[in-house]
Image 1 (cartoon, rainbow, N blue to C red):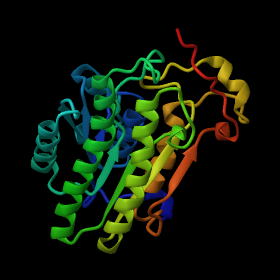
Image 2: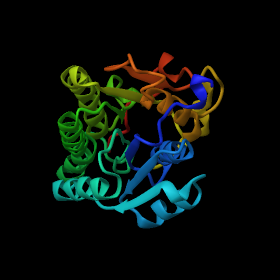
Image 3: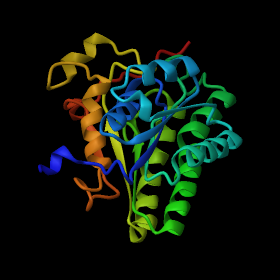
Length: 260
Protein backbone atom coordinates (compact mmCIF):
# COMPACT_ATOMS: atom_id res chain seq x y z
CA UNK A 1 0.00 0.00 0.00
CA UNK A 2 1.31 3.46 -0.90
CA UNK A 3 2.38 5.72 1.95
CA UNK A 4 0.38 8.52 0.34
CA UNK A 5 -2.81 6.48 0.39
CA UNK A 6 -2.85 6.32 4.21
CA UNK A 7 -1.53 9.62 5.62
CA UNK A 8 -3.60 9.26 8.79
CA UNK A 9 -4.77 6.49 11.11
CA UNK A 10 -8.53 6.97 11.52
CA UNK A 11 -8.53 4.56 14.45
CA UNK A 12 -6.21 6.83 16.47
CA UNK A 13 -6.10 10.26 14.88
CA UNK A 14 -8.59 13.02 15.71
CA UNK A 15 -8.54 16.70 14.85
CA UNK A 16 -9.67 20.16 15.91
CA UNK A 17 -9.75 22.95 13.32
CA UNK A 18 -10.56 26.54 14.25
CA UNK A 19 -11.91 28.87 11.60
CA UNK A 20 -13.41 25.78 9.97
CA UNK A 21 -16.47 27.59 8.69
CA UNK A 22 -14.84 29.21 5.69
CA UNK A 23 -11.69 29.73 3.69
CA UNK A 24 -8.55 27.79 4.41
CA UNK A 25 -9.78 26.36 7.72
CA UNK A 26 -12.84 24.97 5.98
CA UNK A 27 -10.75 23.34 3.24
CA UNK A 28 -8.41 21.72 5.78
CA UNK A 29 -11.22 20.46 8.01
CA UNK A 30 -13.02 19.00 5.00
CA UNK A 31 -9.79 17.38 3.88
CA UNK A 32 -9.29 15.76 7.27
CA UNK A 33 -12.74 14.17 7.42
CA UNK A 34 -12.23 13.12 3.82
CA UNK A 35 -9.23 11.13 5.05
CA UNK A 36 -11.34 9.46 7.72
CA UNK A 37 -10.25 11.68 10.65
CA UNK A 38 -13.00 12.65 13.10
CA UNK A 39 -12.75 16.43 13.30
CA UNK A 40 -14.23 19.30 15.30
CA UNK A 41 -15.25 22.14 12.98
CA UNK A 42 -14.95 25.23 15.22
CA UNK A 43 -16.07 28.65 14.06
CA UNK A 44 -17.87 31.77 15.23
CA UNK A 45 -20.68 31.26 12.69
CA UNK A 46 -23.13 28.38 13.02
CA UNK A 47 -24.37 28.92 9.48
CA UNK A 48 -20.87 28.60 8.03
CA UNK A 49 -20.07 25.51 10.08
CA UNK A 50 -23.25 23.74 9.04
CA UNK A 51 -22.55 24.55 5.39
CA UNK A 52 -18.93 23.39 5.66
CA UNK A 53 -19.94 20.09 7.24
CA UNK A 54 -22.75 19.58 4.75
CA UNK A 55 -20.33 19.99 1.85
CA UNK A 56 -17.81 17.50 3.33
CA UNK A 57 -17.19 14.03 1.95
CA UNK A 58 -17.75 12.52 5.40
CA UNK A 59 -20.14 14.76 7.37
CA UNK A 60 -20.66 11.89 9.78
CA UNK A 61 -17.10 12.43 11.05
CA UNK A 62 -17.56 16.18 11.64
CA UNK A 63 -18.42 17.70 15.03
CA UNK A 64 -19.71 21.30 14.98
CA UNK A 65 -18.72 23.85 17.63
CA UNK A 66 -19.76 27.49 17.65
CA UNK A 67 -18.09 30.21 19.73
CA UNK A 68 -15.92 33.31 19.86
CA UNK A 69 -12.31 32.33 20.53
CA UNK A 70 -11.53 35.91 21.48
CA UNK A 71 -12.91 34.88 24.88
CA UNK A 72 -10.69 32.64 27.02
CA UNK A 73 -13.78 30.95 28.48
CA UNK A 74 -14.81 29.95 24.96
CA UNK A 75 -11.42 28.32 24.40
CA UNK A 76 -11.95 26.20 27.50
CA UNK A 77 -15.47 25.34 26.35
CA UNK A 78 -14.07 24.23 22.99
CA UNK A 79 -11.45 22.05 24.66
CA UNK A 80 -14.09 20.39 26.83
CA UNK A 81 -16.41 19.83 23.88
CA UNK A 82 -13.63 18.37 21.73
CA UNK A 83 -12.56 15.98 24.45
CA UNK A 84 -16.14 14.88 25.10
CA UNK A 85 -16.69 14.19 21.41
CA UNK A 86 -13.32 12.78 20.37
CA UNK A 87 -11.24 11.94 23.43
CA UNK A 88 -7.68 13.18 22.99
CA UNK A 89 -7.18 15.53 20.05
CA UNK A 90 -4.04 14.53 18.16
CA UNK A 91 -4.11 17.10 15.34
CA UNK A 92 -4.77 20.80 15.87
CA UNK A 93 -5.12 23.49 13.18
CA UNK A 94 -5.45 27.14 14.19
CA UNK A 95 -6.92 29.07 11.28
CA UNK A 96 -9.40 31.34 13.07
CA UNK A 97 -8.84 35.07 12.61
CA UNK A 98 -11.11 38.12 12.76
CA UNK A 99 -11.92 39.83 9.46
CA UNK A 100 -9.49 42.44 8.14
CA UNK A 101 -10.54 45.88 6.96
CA UNK A 102 -8.25 48.03 4.87
CA UNK A 103 -9.49 51.05 6.84
CA UNK A 104 -7.83 49.74 10.04
CA UNK A 105 -4.35 51.10 9.27
CA UNK A 106 -1.93 52.30 11.95
CA UNK A 107 -3.56 55.68 12.50
CA UNK A 108 -7.11 54.33 12.41
CA UNK A 109 -7.22 50.95 14.17
CA UNK A 110 -8.96 51.15 17.54
CA UNK A 111 -7.96 49.36 20.73
CA UNK A 112 -10.80 46.83 20.59
CA UNK A 113 -9.96 45.78 17.03
CA UNK A 114 -6.27 45.49 17.95
CA UNK A 115 -7.01 43.35 20.99
CA UNK A 116 -9.49 41.12 19.18
CA UNK A 117 -7.00 40.34 16.41
CA UNK A 118 -4.33 39.34 18.92
CA UNK A 119 -6.79 37.49 21.17
CA UNK A 120 -8.09 35.19 18.43
CA UNK A 121 -4.84 34.63 16.55
CA UNK A 122 -2.26 34.55 19.31
CA UNK A 123 -3.88 34.15 22.73
CA UNK A 124 -6.37 31.50 21.65
CA UNK A 125 -3.75 29.68 19.58
CA UNK A 126 -1.35 29.53 22.50
CA UNK A 127 -3.96 28.47 25.05
CA UNK A 128 -5.50 25.77 22.88
CA UNK A 129 -2.15 24.34 21.78
CA UNK A 130 -0.75 24.25 25.29
CA UNK A 131 -3.78 22.55 26.79
CA UNK A 132 -4.03 20.01 23.96
CA UNK A 133 -0.32 19.29 24.34
CA UNK A 134 -0.66 18.76 28.07
CA UNK A 135 -3.30 16.11 27.47
CA UNK A 136 -1.18 14.36 24.85
CA UNK A 137 1.90 14.44 27.08
CA UNK A 138 -0.06 12.92 29.98
CA UNK A 139 -1.36 10.20 27.65
CA UNK A 140 2.10 9.67 26.09
CA UNK A 141 0.70 10.16 22.60
CA UNK A 142 2.20 11.96 19.59
CA UNK A 143 0.55 14.96 17.99
CA UNK A 144 0.80 17.44 15.16
CA UNK A 145 -0.21 21.11 15.29
CA UNK A 146 -0.44 23.60 12.42
CA UNK A 147 -0.79 27.38 12.67
CA UNK A 148 -1.93 29.56 9.77
CA UNK A 149 0.40 32.55 9.76
CA UNK A 150 0.94 34.96 6.86
CA UNK A 151 3.49 36.40 4.48
CA UNK A 152 2.96 39.56 6.52
CA UNK A 153 4.60 38.04 9.55
CA UNK A 154 7.71 39.43 7.89
CA UNK A 155 6.38 42.01 5.42
CA UNK A 156 4.32 45.09 6.39
CA UNK A 157 0.70 44.87 5.35
CA UNK A 158 -0.60 48.37 6.25
CA UNK A 159 -2.58 46.53 8.95
CA UNK A 160 -0.34 46.55 12.01
CA UNK A 161 -2.76 44.63 14.25
CA UNK A 162 -2.86 41.76 11.74
CA UNK A 163 0.82 41.68 10.82
CA UNK A 164 2.04 41.83 14.42
CA UNK A 165 -0.37 39.06 15.46
CA UNK A 166 0.87 36.82 12.66
CA UNK A 167 4.52 37.66 13.39
CA UNK A 168 4.00 36.64 17.01
CA UNK A 169 2.34 33.41 15.87
CA UNK A 170 5.35 32.62 13.70
CA UNK A 171 7.61 32.78 16.74
CA UNK A 172 5.07 30.90 18.86
CA UNK A 173 5.30 28.02 16.38
CA UNK A 174 9.05 27.83 16.94
CA UNK A 175 8.74 28.07 20.72
CA UNK A 176 6.11 25.34 20.88
CA UNK A 177 8.03 23.13 18.46
CA UNK A 178 11.17 23.39 20.58
CA UNK A 179 9.31 22.64 23.82
CA UNK A 180 6.98 19.91 22.62
CA UNK A 181 9.36 18.07 20.30
CA UNK A 182 10.74 15.78 22.99
CA UNK A 183 7.17 14.64 23.61
CA UNK A 184 6.65 13.71 19.93
CA UNK A 185 4.37 16.69 19.29
CA UNK A 186 5.25 18.53 16.09
CA UNK A 187 4.32 22.18 15.51
CA UNK A 188 4.56 23.88 12.11
CA UNK A 189 3.23 26.89 10.22
CA UNK A 190 1.46 27.21 6.90
CA UNK A 191 2.06 30.57 5.23
CA UNK A 192 -0.62 31.51 2.67
CA UNK A 193 -0.21 34.10 -0.04
CA UNK A 194 -3.09 35.95 -1.75
CA UNK A 195 -5.86 33.43 -1.22
CA UNK A 196 -9.31 34.43 -2.47
CA UNK A 197 -11.13 32.87 0.44
CA UNK A 198 -12.37 33.56 3.94
CA UNK A 199 -12.39 37.23 4.84
CA UNK A 200 -9.85 38.28 2.22
CA UNK A 201 -11.26 39.90 -0.90
CA UNK A 202 -8.37 39.75 -3.34
CA UNK A 203 -7.83 42.32 -6.05
CA UNK A 204 -7.54 40.35 -9.32
CA UNK A 205 -4.77 42.77 -10.33
CA UNK A 206 -2.53 41.07 -7.77
CA UNK A 207 -2.21 38.16 -10.17
CA UNK A 208 0.34 40.08 -12.23
CA UNK A 209 2.73 39.93 -9.25
CA UNK A 210 2.36 36.14 -8.87
CA UNK A 211 4.80 34.02 -10.90
CA UNK A 212 2.24 31.23 -11.26
CA UNK A 213 -0.12 33.77 -12.78
CA UNK A 214 -3.23 33.52 -10.60
CA UNK A 215 -4.66 34.18 -7.17
CA UNK A 216 -4.75 31.24 -4.81
CA UNK A 217 -7.77 29.34 -3.54
CA UNK A 218 -8.35 27.60 -0.23
CA UNK A 219 -8.06 24.20 -1.92
CA UNK A 220 -4.49 25.11 -2.94
CA UNK A 221 -3.55 25.03 0.76
CA UNK A 222 -5.31 21.90 1.95
CA UNK A 223 -3.00 19.27 0.37
CA UNK A 224 0.10 20.88 1.89
CA UNK A 225 -1.66 21.27 5.23
CA UNK A 226 -2.61 17.61 5.39
CA UNK A 227 0.88 16.56 4.34
CA UNK A 228 2.47 18.60 7.11
CA UNK A 229 -0.09 17.43 9.67
CA UNK A 230 0.46 13.76 8.81
CA UNK A 231 2.90 12.06 11.17
CA UNK A 232 3.42 9.39 8.53
CA UNK A 233 4.41 11.84 5.80
CA UNK A 234 6.15 14.58 7.81
CA UNK A 235 7.18 12.84 11.01
CA UNK A 236 10.63 14.48 11.12
CA UNK A 237 9.42 18.02 10.42
CA UNK A 238 8.83 20.55 13.19
CA UNK A 239 9.28 24.28 13.70
CA UNK A 240 9.05 24.85 9.95
CA UNK A 241 7.04 27.35 7.89
CA UNK A 242 5.66 26.25 4.53
CA UNK A 243 4.89 29.04 2.09
CA UNK A 244 2.05 28.37 -0.36
CA UNK A 245 1.74 31.57 -2.39
CA UNK A 246 2.38 30.88 -6.06
CA UNK A 247 5.64 32.80 -5.71
CA UNK A 248 4.03 36.04 -4.50
CA UNK A 249 6.58 36.46 -1.71
CA UNK A 250 9.19 37.16 -4.36
CA UNK A 251 7.86 40.71 -4.43
CA UNK A 252 6.32 43.26 -2.06
CA UNK A 253 3.28 44.71 -3.76
CA UNK A 254 1.63 46.84 -1.06
CA UNK A 255 1.93 50.62 -1.21
CA UNK A 256 1.74 52.77 1.93
CA UNK A 257 -1.83 53.71 2.90
CA UNK A 258 -3.37 57.02 1.94
CA UNK A 259 -3.86 59.01 5.12
CA UNK A 260 -6.59 61.53 5.53
